[in-house]
Length: 54
Image 1 (tube, rainbow, N blue to C red):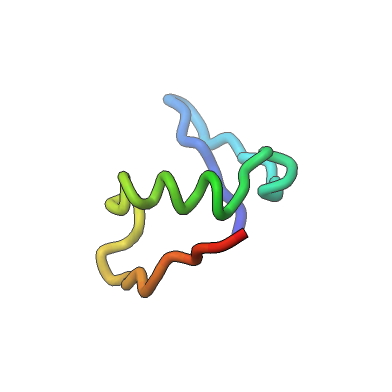
Image 2: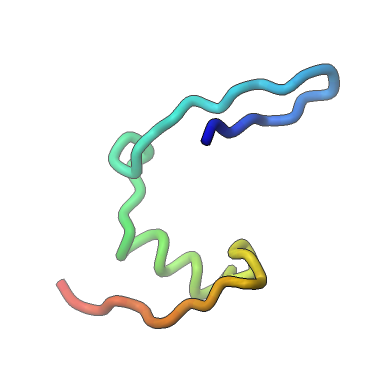
């Protein structure tokens, strides 16, 4: 599903990228941020657990 940024006069497509392209790591970045900002997820979602380990 494509994502768009809403501009004052139009929508601008956001280029598709992978975590690797964005230099984001699931365990080191996403889990850390979700611990402090869980509200970015939908209200109907349930976060079951966090993965720990190397």
